[in-house]
Image (cartoon, rainbow, N blue to C red):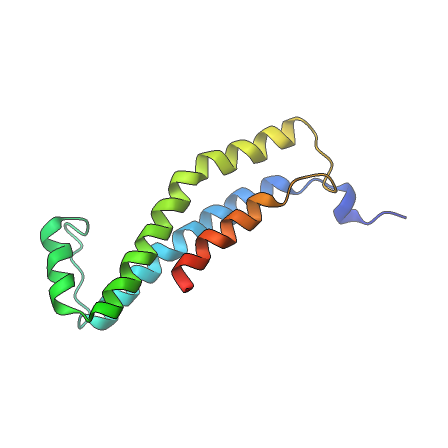
Length: 118
């Protein structure tokens, strides 16, 4: 008797999960800077060079390093989102069985997220 999870293709549910988890490093980076910078966050121009320089000057180097890694992880996940979504959709259209669906995309996601936490 086969399990419902091995016979039902749930791959499309991985897309909103990926997107939600890809937004986490962005929120984490804002939290890091706000907590180390007396809750100051430049909402008008958060990517501006002046803003980044002011963060670099006002927060400790270790905190700024974690902020940069979190931003880099978020950017990497956003850049890889079209590839991930495309592979999931193509696999779904090709009707890959859940038991043969490659789990490498989940491994790649967790390795890229490991850069934030490491």
